[in-house]
Structures are given as C-alpha cells and as structure tokens.
Length: 42
Image (cartoon, rainbow, N blue to C red; front, side, top):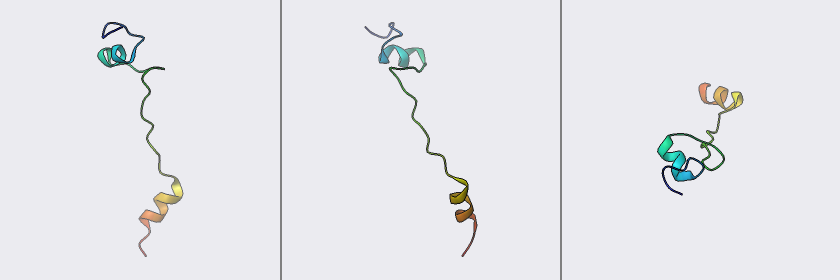
C-alpha cells in the first residue's frame, strides 16, 4: 500500500493518473448569461 500500488491514492499520484480514489477537481463553468452581463458596460 504505497507508491507502487496503483489502486491507492498515493499510487495514483505517483503514476500521474486519476480514478475513483483520486478525483479531478471540477471547474465551475460560467454560463452564457453571466458572460453577456460581464461584457455589457453600464
């Protein structure tokens, strides 16, 4: 259960991979309405 074990979180970090034990951070996407509001000068 260390860096060589690909099924563990530490092993995923060492192997530069993702999976059930190491989730990717989800980026919050801006909606079209928010983009339009930001572009319009008031």
